Image 1 (cartoon, one colour):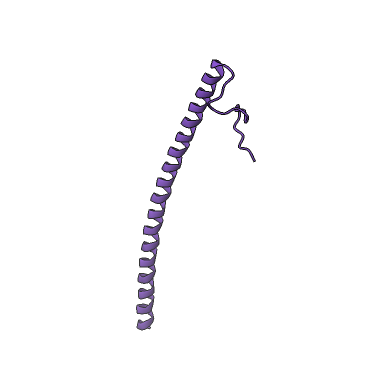
Image 2 (cartoon, one colour):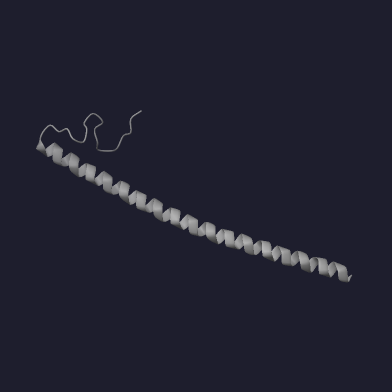
Length: 83
């Protein structure tokens, strides 16, 4: 199975070229791909940081919900004892 990237020929490696123009073109394409990969990695890092921040918020809210549930349970027991 071969990974196909648009505009790249599978049978030509980065370092091989028929003439100097192909070598420059391949170098430019390689640089473009590297920049796109780097940008994608930065995007993934940003998404991971956001996901961690959201998880922290969820954990805080879950803890708050547990505290509120205990408070409600205690109030319910106190009200039941008064009747």
